Image (tube, rainbow, N blue to C red; front, top):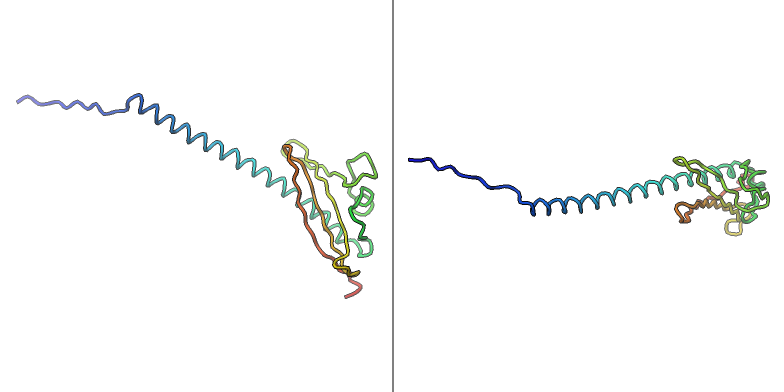
Length: 157
């Protein structure tokens, strides 16, 4: 008896190979899109974290001042920042509002603009509300972060 040799023609055709490459390409484009989006969100998060640090630094400096020196005066000017807090302004106009603070980030400079607003809390002379808003611009979009606290006159405890 003559042995029968079985020929195995199983394999991938050219069309099957092309379809699988198109599927892999579509998956890779989706992954690249997700990576780009996650990197952008990561950068936004780091810039917001730096803005929070700027706001907390300013707020802590204000909280360290005697209660009487924290005058409810609306938005502070450059003179308030330099005289009271010691933050030099990068704005050439000494009467300008909202002095920018420059911080380096991955090889470029981000201009953070703090705004401080002090008001009496609930019309009570022994309580003051301090609001620090830090604004910055990145990739054509304006962003901001605000923190608030209330301070009490320690003389009236």
